[in-house]
Length: 68
Figure (tube, rainbow, N blue to C red):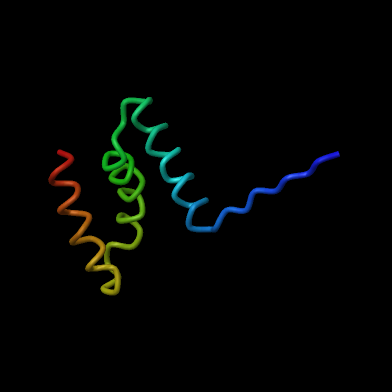
């Protein structure tokens, strides 16, 4: 009986999972940017008034502007 093992790093695994997500979004006709805007929208409604999130919302506005 022959046994073989394959070891992958966490970084490689994360890259594979991210690529799978991108491929899934593209097959569904939705870009990763559109998905990000859709997921962050509700969070912004809840956390918009917290100043520690201000840089995130500024970046979100830039992304959302491009997506619109």
